[in-house]
Image (cartoon, rainbow, N blue to C red; front, side):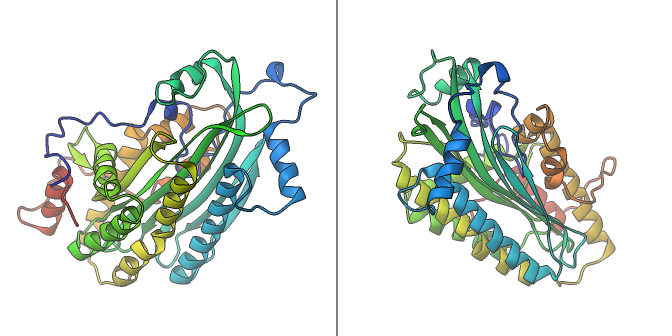
Length: 373
């Protein structure tokens, strides 16, 4: 048993301190108002302008800055994932592209009220900006390479986030997020960097073989880079995606990690790890979806799905720091942030599942996470 018991006595590993200033929630555009006109240097090209010139002059390669390689990778994966999901659903995603005044932008892809998905969002954010001294000082706690005495630093952040809510209550909701952050030197070279991300499954009806398959696929991706990763990141996932007001995990977990920097492993190996994790999404989830999307269900089972979605909403709006930060950031793209919420959900007063039912077994496991592989 990797994770702790129902008491969850040590749920301290929450989002790291840097995430109080930067969290890529599902599609959140991270519209920071951190770089003001008074601090802009009009005679010097910004980091965004330097990168735009690099992209005009040559194709992105293994020799390009990591920020450009990560941007290219997540855009490619977004296209692959959207194409595969469209094959399953039969409907097309709506695609919205947006830009930030200070550099970067995003691509929000949403499929709503389809044949298979009630709501699906596969979103990208790419952000350039300037960190003020207070933000740098807080990040210094987790990244000692940052100089806490400088007045400001250029930064870059990019990530792909996804939440899929199927219509059929036998098919589980899934969430994914992989991201990269770095600060830059005046010449545009990378200074301090780190990766974060993960993927987790939230079923309304638990099929053990689905949970085993999902976790095993993630474990295989982890094990190919470090045999300690899966157990460590599985535990972190169970502890973060936790509705503490109910004493339950949001779902049956997966992996979650953050702040993977040079103290953990070199940049190339960490990027390779993130790539393999993101590429593992389709084999981890689509076989489950194909098995469950057309299963018969009744009104009672649909009602239970709605109640479980209510708990999903509770976590995202009450506990998720990315959602809270996005909604409280001036100029943020609210529609992209709230794409993570299901189209429908419900709350019934004092509802309890029948003893020894399938619904009760799910609740028991949400209270005491299981080691699936």
